[in-house]
Image (cartoon, rainbow, N blue to C red; front, side, top):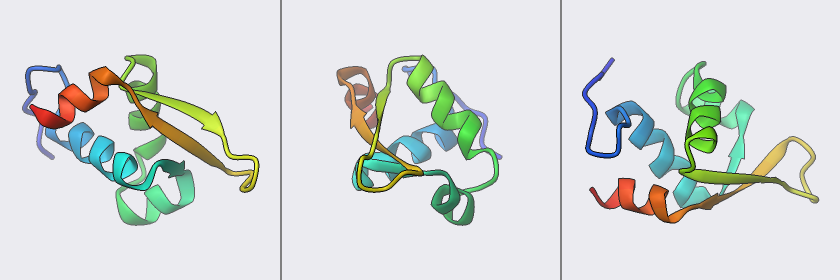
Length: 79
């Protein structure tokens, strides 16, 4: 597992998660578990708690969250 941190304080693995959900504009824990790994809930929570993303419930899909990437999140993706 890659543990290096970039200027935004995220590991390269967390940046991968941010890219993944930024491209899809949603977070589905089951899909993330299948496509990324079993620690997805923890990493998504960390991204939300540290202001990189905003999650909101998806009214059309009860177990999915819509993702808004914040300015801080965009900056982390650009770095």
